[in-house]
Amino acid sequence: MANTSKKGFYRSAAWIALACLVVPMFASYYFDDMFSSISYLFENASLTQLGWDAAGYGLYASGYSVLCVFGGLVIGGILLDKWGVRVSGSVFVGMMAAGAGMVLWALLSGASWSLQAAYVGVMFFGLGSEIAGTAVTRSIAKWFKGGPMALAMGLQLAIARLGTAFALVLSPMLVKEQAGHVYTLAETARPALVGMGLMALGLILWAVFVALDARADRHSRLDRESPEMADQVGHDEDTFRFKDVLGVLGNKNFWLLGLLCVLFYSSIIAFKKFAGAILIPRFDIPAQAAGWMVSMLPFSTVIFAPLFGMLVDKAGKGTRWMVVGAVLALIAHLLLAFAPAGVPFWGYLAMVFLGFGYSLVPAALWPSVPKIVPDKVLGTTFALIYWVQNLGLLSFKWVAGVILGKEGNGPVSVELMFVGLCVAAVVVALVFRRTAARHPELKLDLPNS
Image: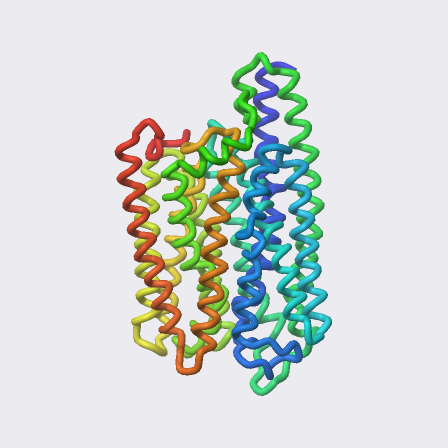
């Protein structure tokens, strides 16, 4: 095959690979957020035959991060760098689907131990999802190296978050709000049943990606004399060694990005878990309206994440956009906490600001990671950042559930926590911007293509 035809193969195959990679992530985001817009079901244990209350739901939601925090993400990231995305990624995509299946089984069982079983299931689902996400991000960095990486990551993020939007809108339709109604096990489990169908489709397309990635590597081995083609598939002459992990942990920029990630994402992901319990009483709206309101977050990223990705690719200034995005999230939570109660306009305006921030920060943050570490530890670095992120998510989801479950507390109480997280995120983003200015050799603010 001539070089020109090989180049054409990799350009077209990269987008096909991306199309396969986004579906498992769409399924993951849907399953993770399937209860967010109907979280009012768990305000009182008597509302469902399942019998979970707000604290129990908060415990369930926090279970996503348990295995991730206690070593799973670090081990998974190392396996990605040692074994590659095809082998280790397949293991964790399978774990994601198996954990989701266990959650569905627990929801349908209605047993006294259903919460404990769902907690175990969501732990495996969470670890599988996070490593699968790391494998997807690692694969995009490999396939789009030297090309429109931020755009590709933005598109992946946009479509994945469309899974969240799908969950936020669909769940209130599947489980219709009925005053005085006790929801059956089958009704409560409907969103999870849809999620398992999406998981099955994701597994099929992941298998297609594995075959495509293997074919690309075979083409690369046949054309090792061409540096251009080696770049196209992302080979690195250096081999991974376990001591390289210490180098990542000693990297100041890794810790700044990790801290920004945990603060920023906690202010949004933990908020989404309790969106119904916050927006419904705060702005006096029905559950379905609250679902549409919070769905503005993922819907906005479908449009703006790729656009901001192209902006970072072409114009650079990534650290500037991180600061802007963190400030927009702060404004959003200030509105959610202090805007006049009972006026839905303020809720919609807050979602606009939060949606822009939710698009800007990731579009700049994730393409910055390959600039601060060598390719051979990229999977480990992504996994370590996700580890720091999950440590925060584990804590703040649980704390949010405790705050809302305490008698006398309302949505404003938990919003004050989110405001504090955003203030800290702005400070960290400013520090990272200053670091980028002091170290131009990292090219953090230069265009990607």
